[in-house]
Length: 174
Image (tube, rainbow, N blue to C red; front, side, top):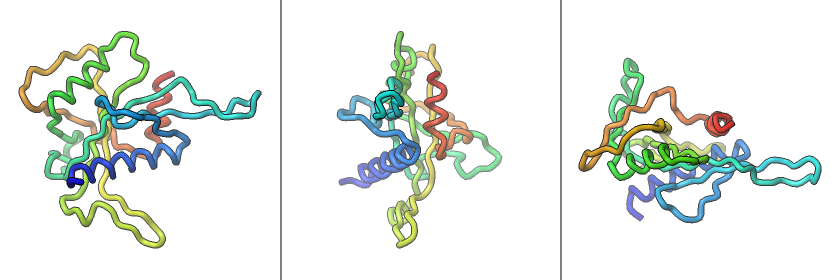
């Protein structure tokens, strides 16, 4: 696998670990612009069994080394700037503007160290995965970009993916 492939798989694993820890799971089988499709199972108390809920969020994952983002380490800035490929940006627009869509498409940008040996470390008492991920969602009503290659997006630093990420996203579906 290429380094980019490895970075993407590590990033998807990171997002799946957080999902699993909070009772969510990845149900994707095929990738059409979506890397993860997160669902939740809930207990049906009458029948005493778990059933998959009718809610889901789709995630498009981009794994990048820190040199491909701007303002990540600048504490005076409230946004991380990332140049997203136009085709991926327009995929987000299409989903945001899809009439009757119930499943949002969220971009997760996982920022990793420059040095491959720093991405992941395993010790007897801990697993260390370096740096972090931020999420971005385009509001409905946006228009396709006419740029040729990339679109610079501003991701709020407040959108850092933390342990409560899925609970927050799923509560927004209510």
